[in-house]
Length: 93
Image 1 (cartoon, rainbow, N blue to C red):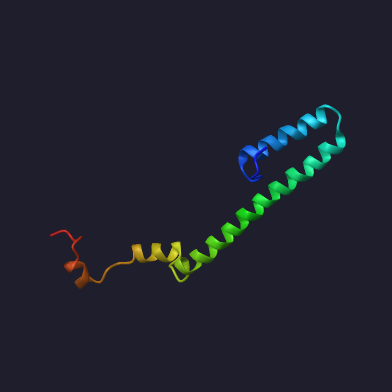
Image 2 (cartoon, helix red, strand yellow):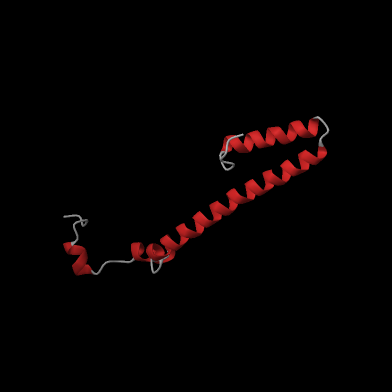
């Protein structure tokens, strides 16, 4: 097993070792390895949650005070005033 338990290869090796211990009847070692496996998995999940929280904090400023989908639809469907429509580059000349 590698020295970095959060690598996928290390987790797979730990899982394989636990299964081998259980298969040969060493329940005590198997339970200990199950605990290590659980601890490692939870640690990875915790790291992911922390990353997601940091991303949410960074993105909050970008999305605050932006129009909602219904507000954007309302703006899109709103009629332009007649004089503005005449000067609009999208009007048919």
